Image (cartoon, rainbow, N blue to C red; front, side):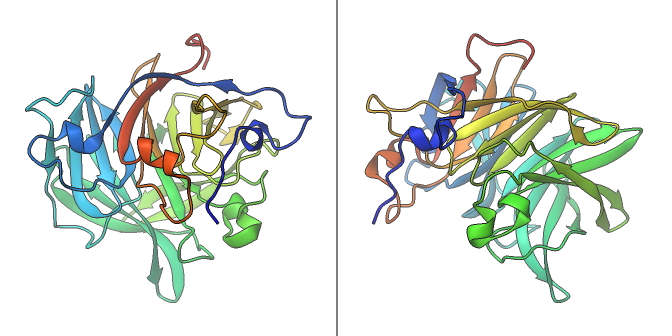
Amino acid sequence: MKQDLDSTKYQGGHAKQPPVEQLELLEEAKISELLPGIADQRFEASGVVARDGWFYVIFDNSTNIGCIKDGLRATEGNHLIEQNQGAAAGYEDIAYDPITNRFYLLIEVLPHFGNLVAKVEEYDEQFRYISSGWLDFPLDHPNKGLEGLTCIHQAGQTYLLGICEGNKCRGGAAGRKPGGGRIQIFRKDQDRWDHMGTMKLPKSLWFEDYSCLAVVDDRIAVVSQASSAAWIGRFSPSSWEVVDEGSVYRFPLDDKGKVLYCNIEGISRVDAARFVVVSDKAKVKEQSKRCCAKEMSIHVFKTPRHRENQ
């Protein structure tokens, strides 16, 4: 039986939830239409980061990195960066450190000395491989690991923040129970990333899963694929605690109130007004055909009325 997604589930699941505003779409395109000469390839997007007018997109079916100009036009400058020095499989997310000009590519979960942990590969600004390191946090499911990654600096230190796909970092039914969003905090120590703590998202947040996150200053954005919605709130960089309940915005619905954006994977802030997200391939056997309309695409949104405090 195919998944029949409708708007009621994404407004909190019960009558006590306040109405959820809708994000405003600015522009979008199929990734294959933006990369000249390679329109016949599949681009199962899993993460994106904005940097200096370009969107760097990674895929879970390829190790190559898509480089797409802001504006989403099929220009000659758009291209694929081929790289085969790191993982033999695709990546789950990408983060950028503007202080060191380093990119970090996330591998969701791998076996390591009897445990399941995530791994990060480090690249320079030309996407030349530098090193890799394990993220020192045990995961309990081979298909439910760290789903999103972002990089921040605090007190002269570089930190990676990784969001668990399941609530309370669990797989299965336990991971789909809302109210347990968790962001793990890591700091580099030679050839690994030490676990420094956990940031808890508000218990009131009704997301069934978490697919990506982005941080700018004290603002944090989190996206749920299953709930087709984004949460934007604030946190304290000194205490690593969320300091407000934030706001939830759903991705646009069709004219019948059905979900269109079924496979959102990555998010990155473009500027004060806009953020960019990407969509993975639709799950044909599980989802409605309408989900195919937005699959393997890149989208630019803003919050309603462009709220400056968001």
